[in-house]
Length: 184
Image (tube, rainbow, N blue to C red; front, side):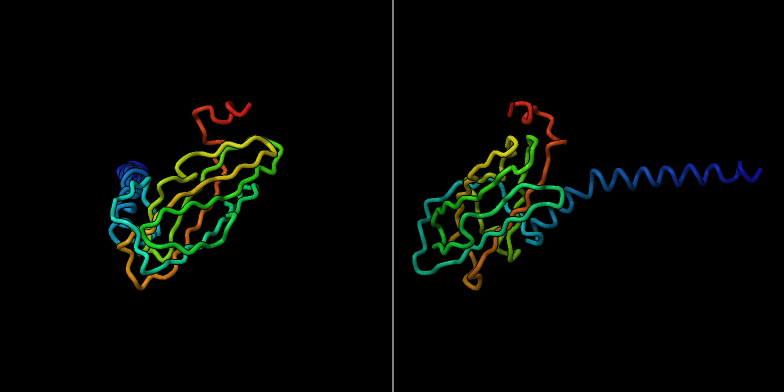
């Protein structure tokens, strides 16, 4: 009799767990992205940017610093070739990052960007970036990874320095389009 009384409770608890899992999997990521976009928290940059014809603001400069780190599971060498540049808002600037697969196996990497201060993220536009694509490298292979960016002319004057950091992740096991097979 006691077992019959707990069945509805167990069923309700299991349904609750499944609902929480579905909520966390399908509802929370878009809500978090929307929250970050509205508040500027998280330092996420937008996707590819098409420059306007507004011109270059030569009356001021902004220092842009570059940081490269590897996720704990990533064993590549990864670094910017220059650690900072000084740019005029509205000016397209190209820098290069260096990557070397120092392992003995073919791998695929993905770089995830972050901008600080967080309120500068919506003013930092990448027109070309290695982070837009997966980066397959054969064992021992190295590559120069280009980045072209524009600091928006509307960047608040109080922001004098922007830091763009990339974290490099090993996504070899997650690739389903055959990118690793193409390396051979």
